[in-house]
Length: 226
Image (cartoon, rainbow, N blue to C red; front, top):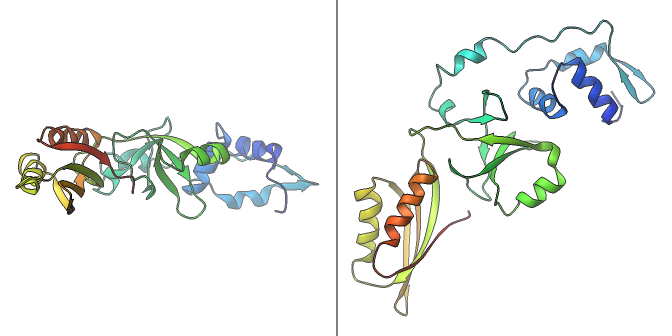
């Protein structure tokens, strides 16, 4: 409509669409709950939007949204709770920090890929929060034990006969965790292992780390960032 996205104009849209805040307005647009064709009813006065009068009542969210929670598919079960509401929305996990359920996270609304979930200690978190605060949304995980998430560990310890067997026995034998990849390199009496596993949440990952730390000769275990 060739008018600026000024605070005045945004507030006019927030009131017209009966949203509690600009962030809620952006989100409802992103998930296509708002019919933007209604903008044709606005008048443009200089650089300001003037809503039609009387203001058309905003349609309530479809009732079917409330039924989805009882008929969720496996894909739906991966979803997070958005903000303060119980609406479940689609998302992607950021490759830069690979969050898993239980991590402290925030959602970031991207221009082309929808909502992406980052860990709060992600290397990119400070820049996103400082420069794009209007795109950041509060998020929290939905508990679900059917969905597994890929993450990785770097293990350093004393090289010893049978060390690989001991490690894999704890992971897949005792804890029944699926291994996606495993590489071990030995040098000068030490080994460095990179292990990729599928876990359900942070608690399961922490239990795995604690069990591995109990092995003789393990010097350090760190979570891979990517």
